[in-house]
Length: 277
Ligand SMILES: [Ca+2]
Image (cartoon, rainbow, N blue to C red):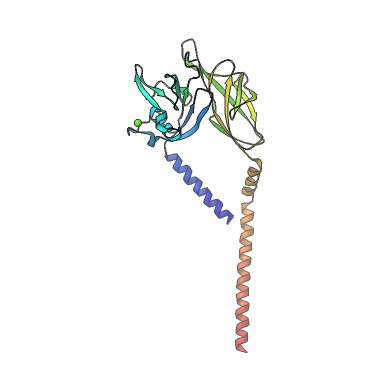
């Protein structure tokens, strides 16, 4: 029975994964300019976001849909306007920052709101903290998410997007940044390679971000899922022994069937004997 349920669950999971693979999805993150990530890698169905129905998905369409789905006042919390340089954001997450917003796709700063988004893209929109001189520095972790076991450690790598002498954005490992775990500053600090190794005592999902004394960072985000050890141990044990378990069960079943058949035969024989008498 257990085997059957497991098989059924695997089938359901395969089905779910296949369905997901067919849906065009973008992962949206929004931060509010006060160090808070208010939307953390939430999914937006691109087909649903395509309001003009042209089959092309823009950052603008994705952000509009993300607000409709996740913001307190829905679509009212997002607005755009047309300016000298094209379409720009005039309201993000209900915050009027006087146009001080930025956005990136897959950790690359986008050139405009009409830039396209494709399946699997990570779209990040943020309100600047510094709304006068726009000194906020875009930062990101090498991995969007990771899964570890309780006893395992995980090394994360932080990058900051700075501008070189030609005013070209360049991603550099960021040293001396303090790691923030679920909104609270930790003791972890990145090294010269932008790396730091983290350990977690309890299972759960952790939002990893970073802050720096040297610059104002746009909050980076890595979701770390920590899995319990016991569950994993018993799972692997089970997967090692199913053949033996099944064999034992089959033997038990055959024995039970033979026993029932023998019992019926005995009863029939006894009844026949009685009749003959
Ligand atoms: Ca479109």
